[in-house]
Length: 363
Image (tube, rainbow, N blue to C red; front, side, top):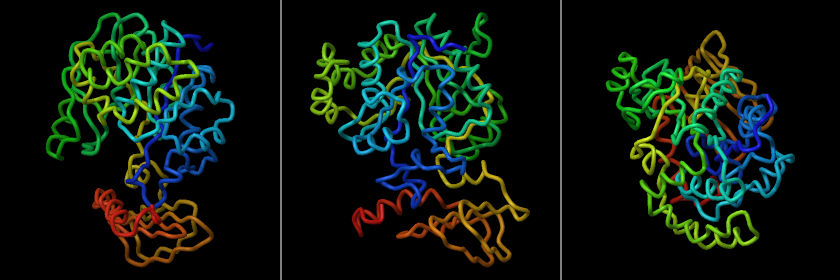
């Protein structure tokens, strides 16, 4: 497959991954870590995955300013000008709006695939095929397309997409009927049983012109932040404009800002062996386990009567544990987490409390 010159990829890689504390830290978030023991960070694996679809000069990384040097080190073949460094932390809508404006200034005919930097895709050939078909669809239609993942269990940590009317000329692509954010367990079970709902992958495809038109209609506040820079994007003046304008952007997700409001939203249903690797339990579910259901990451473990637990250590250390069931044990040089897997939603609150009580030293 020869990548099209007008196809671009935007990879969002500015988050701090607080649900993966203490491994994911402010200075080195999870997307830059080799979490799976492959020798490649999650970000590098994401870039590897899109290389058959997009040439390196058309791969853009949107990140926080503090991570630009890490990206240059991990991805030396990506041009430095393709790192869009945000001067302030916002959500995915401002990130995507800036990237779309920048790319439109480069290429008025551009189509864009937008995806997170920290997901796992086991079926990479299926991913390439789905993305190629999806890009063809948005290039021929004024449409906003997302990939919907066939659910395998009633997950409450994912958003869901309800499929609507199928398109006769585009197999597997349907109008979106509704979005639901992170349902409770009973609702998730209903969604799974109905066969009408798919996990929201957070992977989006559109033309730059289509998504910017959607911002004008559905999220004019975000659009207005970037409008004064129309003649500055892809020029030496862009960096200074962003430094002053970007901090005033509202912190809002692309789902709330656009996808739940626009009338030209479609879903392509896929089976990719996908996980968002959003927390320790997601890593546990995608990892090889021993005969007692335990997972070990980069460490030696002597587990006595331990079951269904995950052990992860940084440094040359052995873990000795007795009688643990369904626990996370994650150790770094200056932080240790011991938490039941079914209470891991508390980790984000723990991180906030650590910040309030001890500052950023342990974050």
